[in-house]
Length: 345
Image (cartoon, rainbow, N blue to C red):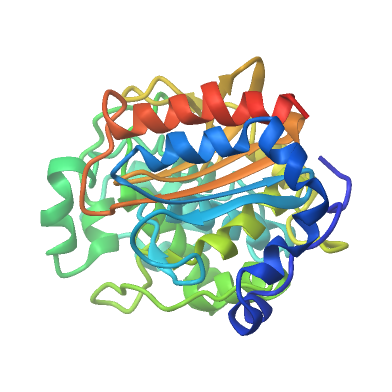
């Protein structure tokens, strides 16, 4: 995962100015081959998933398929829901790379003690960035049925950190947006920058992508782990950077050490059964390992370095996507259609 991109994509500004043809231009020489290896069949299968809105596939450093089947265009920023967690995890890696925080084992009481409310269990002081980024803090979840009450509270960070421990830190994954919100707030305290500014400076600028503002909590902290918006043609750049070990267009956006650590299994989701690293779900299909970012409704980034493959999927963000429903259908699209098509080249 250390080779530089075979051919960097044009900037989003260029796409907006000249249209999608500017992105697809480098692929004209392989159009016939693309049809032969099944990309048309992939598009047909995706089109039949009525909840799915767009699909972008990059293979061997080129965009091989880019289509908005319904809904917004590929250059319009859309809510990617909990794919935001993967973005925040990457910002965490960038902060560590820059020495803004001591490392993944840095304690909350060390880097942002003022965020810890007096009512919190003393063990909260010893929660590490690693506990939070793997959602193994052990605190009662803020997601699921608890989400509404959490975002209705007067202080989202304090609310998340004042919850009772329902497990020992590091002893299992408890899916909780609050863990990532605490990360964003802690990084803001450590750096003096907002999560928006860090995301723009450390990811958006080197990747050449737009990062619109999004939801802030009552204290002005940007929501960590939900509600970010990106254009599909921007997200494919982030996916490719991940596939290439943190590199984009000759620049090391995230360090190889962080990328290697982020894609190692640290825990497992009780809901999907997938392993989880630092903000990435980890799966296997068609004989190869891949990493997934997953958001409510069926927002997905998939990266399979062994197949030189990156995939971005957006779906209706108002409808659920369970493992036995739309997300399961997306997994089958990836495992049974996209990965085999990449292997056929």
